[in-house]
Length: 401
View 1 (cartoon, one colour):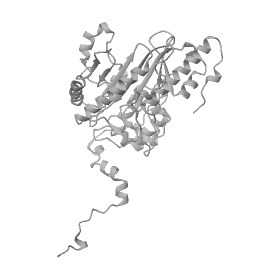
View 2 (view 1 turned 135 degrees about the vertical axis):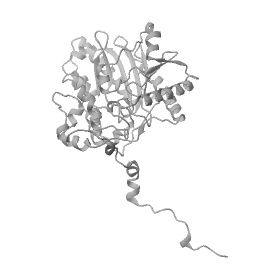
View 3 (view 1 turned 180 degrees about the horizontal axis):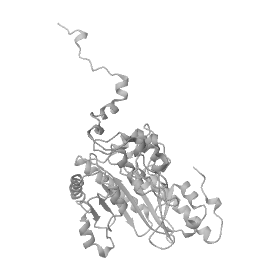
View 4 (view 1 turned 120 degrees about the horizontal axis):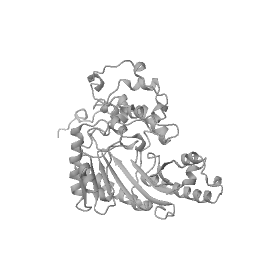
């Protein structure tokens, strides 16, 4: 019987090691360079370098002429240039005594890749976390893994809030988004909410409807701040902005605000265990619905969930507890203690009340982020009790990590 010679056997294409190693990078390089399509009338990097005197943001700490020059002639495919990225920090330079701010916002998901040298320095400065492409951002939405979130001393801890932000693949982020894209996102949200409402009913409000129908519940949306307007986040306000509220009041979802969507669970007690559970359960449901609609959330293995601000990169999760901590706030070692706990302390709306929230959102799971807040607030309450009686808290101060 005739047999085919080995030379005629169809073989797979040769696998070249260097091509395999850089395959993802090569595939991401889509010619021509978007910058060549822009005709920007501007000078050299040295002539265009911004003044950073009196600027206390992370952006100002990181940015120098060398860094600016490296990023100067780059643009994402949607037209985001480096000056768009750093504009928020130039509009709001922060203060020496104020909370640390990143001073920059991504215009789209590609910004984090194209301007990676800048953003990785920002992440390290703000989160004290060094980005490593080999380390994958992990997630843990098992709310039962959170310990001690339901047994605060209610004499001190009075309320809590947990939120998770997400952005949708293939859409620009709020600083760079067009009106058409923003309206498409709201249409997409309505489709997802129709499905979610079958098992978790709620109602979607435009900003106009919100102000008219929910005044009696104390939910009134003020006009956006001038800084949000200057940065571009609140352009065309209130076009295509909306709020969905569940019937049981345990969950709200904001659309087209600082990010494409943000799930929020707020409580008038300090049971952050329940608030955390509400966000974890429903973020997974919403994520599945968007995937079914073929519009998944933006995720990169080494950065986690991509959102507008590098301050919330990774998990996109912020957890906070409002507590009576006036003695801790006035203590001379307050900033050092908060830095060691990786927490932020801000004045709340009520007198003698302070909002404690997490700084770090990347390099930790959702459970670990919230656990930082739970453990940190409990320690701060112990310090407050000690200070009320005139005691010393040196033995309670955590070691520098």
